[in-house]
Image 1: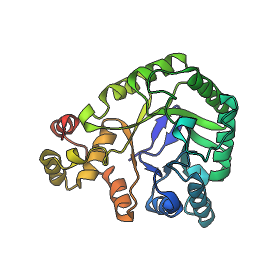
Image 2: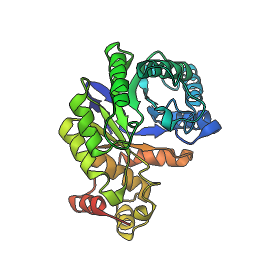
Image 3: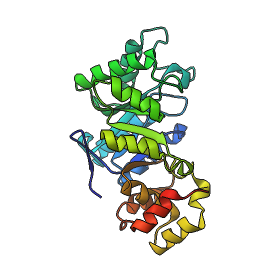
Length: 281
């Protein structure tokens, strides 16, 4: 499947996510690159991510000629203190702009690169609205974008109202929204609709783990069998067909290959697409 064009930047159509992998991060990221993934997602948040492990895998892959930096789409995140543990990548007493600068520099050092392709606000500080802290963080991220240190900006774990508010105040519009995607909520239908309206690419994560009942649904399994796909492959193929940029975090080399192969499958019929869109466990 062809790459996406996002604000003039080529983005691979499938992202390998590195959350919750701890000391296995380097090994699994390396396997994902060998399997063919060319987009990697991480965060400067040691609570859930091991960003330095991603950097170790990247340096090894670059040195071995598996890929070059230009072949890779690399995305990481700034995380507010409330989403961190005690291993902070910045001075929590510093102004938010300084926290962003310190976290960004730590990311470059840990990932062993000179620039990022996408820098994401890892969720607003509060579950309601875009607060003063978020505005300061976004402005600092916009400065990094203006300096050419990151090619794109994004936001994750965001509600429909928060996304509207951010779009209204941002000088640099988010290129991405990254949300946990629940089938029982119409696969985040309302946020996806606003993304389409604003030209934002929706990145869906936990497409399998958040939807265990739905992926076991007889209708979904019947469609998958008819298309000679696994249920997981069907979900990923559906995601791309409705405009999502899917993430997978599988630790299985076989599943890495199967996940990538899903994007080469024929499109779902209109009836099947509607059935998966409406499915609920």
